[in-house]
Amino acid sequence: MQRTDLIAALLLAAGLCCVSLAGYAADDLTPAEARGKHIYTKGESTSSRIITATMSTAAAPTSASILPCIQCHGVDGRGIGVLSPDINWNVLVDPAGHEHPQRKHGPYDTTSLTQAIVEGIDPAGNDFEVTMPRYTMSDADVADLIAYLKRVDTERDPGLSATAIRIGTVLPTEGPLALAGTAMRIVIEAYFDFVNVTGGVHGRDLELVVGEWGEDDTPAFWQAQDLINNEPLFALIAVYMPGYEAEFSALVNERQLPLIGPHTLMGTGGNGRYEFYLQAGLAEQAEALVEAVLRQAATAQADAPKLGIVYPRMQGFEALAEAGRSPAARHAVEPVTMVPYEAYGFDASKAVATLRSAGSEAILFLGSAAEFVELATRASELDWKPVLLAPGIRAESGVVNIPKSFAGEVYLAYASLPSDHTQDGTNLFEALHRDRGLNYRESVSQIAAFSAARVLVEALEKAGPSLSREQLVDSLENIENFQPGLTAAVSFDPNRRMGPSGAHVVRVDLVNGRLAGESFWIDLD
Image 1 (cartoon, one colour):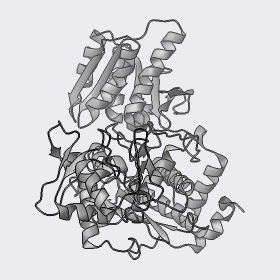
Image 2 (tube, rainbow, N blue to C red):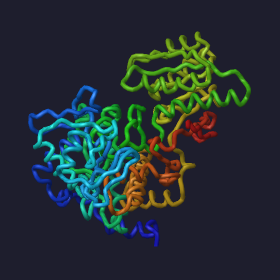
Image 3 (cartoon, one colour):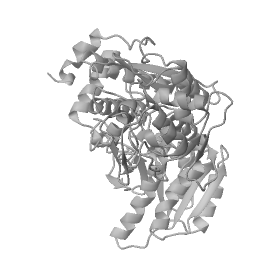
Image 4 (tube, one colour):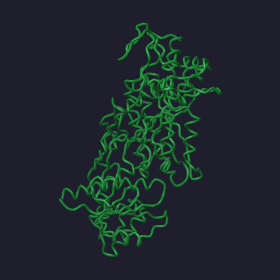
């Protein structure tokens, strides 16, 4: 019987995710192993002793913190890529020895491994390749490092026990975004309970840990830091901290903590190995809107429209404006008229005068819904009707108030539409709502959280029972055309962290006062 056939009965029997810290670490590291782990991961001694790294005999030494072991050999010591070998102890001491492209040698022991770390030579006396640093450190630090190497492959990642996997998120639970944050939490909890009562993931239950923030938390990023610093977590999903994407991106990659997010909203995250995003954020939506009108002109063999971009001077919005400008550069239709304005000080008449004077024929607007309507109203009063473009999440609430004279000339972009929904995904989503008494008031946020949770479970299942964060990352990198149920199919690979790269563009039906006009997908790959 499929999981979706069991959902109603099982969820009624399930309680909220129960969180316990017991059993989330493997056997405690000895003091020597703990010190060795710090050297392995940070390139630093826990004492005042200095550790340096040298790439060749002729090079000047540098701080080992720039070249820690983990950078090439990975969290589990098994290596990242073909050039960094497995340095787990049971591999190093294999009696069969080792053969490399340029050299071969017998097994290591403690003495020969010390020589390898400090002098850069293998048990046969061969010099290592130039990519392997030589480390200058004390005998005590070398001993600690080797102690850790003897168990690096058996140490369990934080948040992982024999029976459970702890997943974290950071959501608003107070203030103006509380409804969205609470709805996201409930949907994730409900889906995790569904997975758990139908067998879990390879025998492990999923547990959700929530870092909460509200209107008095400035910045909200502090709550994310507290959660990651204080809780053993295996991975993160559906974190919602508008305006702090860049800081959070740096944090999760520094901690090597996998993140499955709905989108990187402002386009300022998503550059790290440990981040995976399901949908286009505002940057991709802005780019897709401009790309759409330029492609339409090319298809019609018409001149490309002159572009104007209007945006508030707020954190992240200049990057959004540049993302919208990028198709113009690709299609060689610059210059673009850029019209920034002070936050909460939009002057529609001034903006219209600037754009009209520049001959702008298509306007990408990145302000609020009310400001979007004000721009269109002032333009209509002057009988000036350029094509109007805006991300749906910014403009949707006011678009039906745009003058009817703009009929056929208003386009919104969305990361997902109902056309992405599958029957299986719809049935499951509706069952979660029935059993938790949820409404659909925050449906966009709910869909985002639901989809992130489904991708996470898919990747965990494919990673297998012998689980680590690195295995989860590898599993995510091999997801291809997975359908979360309510969003477009998702694909990732080692060089792709957003799937899919594109957005839906919808021509708004102003005549009938509804959004459901003509729509088409713009692929940005």
